[in-house]
Length: 317
Image (tube, rainbow, N blue to C red; front, side):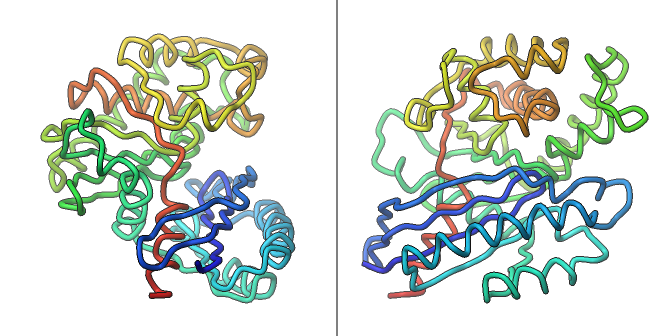
């Protein structure tokens, strides 16, 4: 077994997985898995730069993760940075900070690479499941972008489009620096139109409607599952491989978009960092399900982070 550490730094959150990996099979045994909301992408869509306070939050999380990685004695570390750091003019400042703290340079990957990691992480456990027909459509709804991947055992087509929950919230649901509470029907309609245009773009290169199983990843989807199950606390085991029907996703999305900040914050399974962006994320999921006619979404807690860890194990072969 090889002890590996994987860090996924997205637009809204930074996550760590330390695991023992079998290089011959790629099997992962989790030792530590955690997530911190840092909002690295705060204001990037508007300014094109990473905000100083967002960098400070991210570097603080990196220092915490460095201590955990050292404590577990990981032999390999891979740090992957996604949408926000791809888009920012000052991403060199981010790269230098991570290198100083963790000793590795963050890999600012492309959307296609992001999609490949997400697909591997989400589907490796599903390969032997007879009741989940292929091909899969894996949808990773992040903060700045959403990745679409269609594949069977391997990726057939992938596309990343800029409709993440943070980007959509900042673009349509924020007025004078404050999130609308709740947003007007006009703003929701404008956001929906933008999402539909992005789905048109994704369909140019990814055969979304050929999929027979929809697999949803990341915090927006897992939070919708937690709400659907009325969990008293966020429970990864209950959420992993749960299924949420289209009707339930629609009900939850409509409630989230007409609720107040206080009402969303009162949901016991809601992470405080998702309260203001969950409505946009849920709308992205609902729009995808409507586009492809999905009757349900299979929710996975294993995603790009697991794909990064699998890549570390493969390098150890």
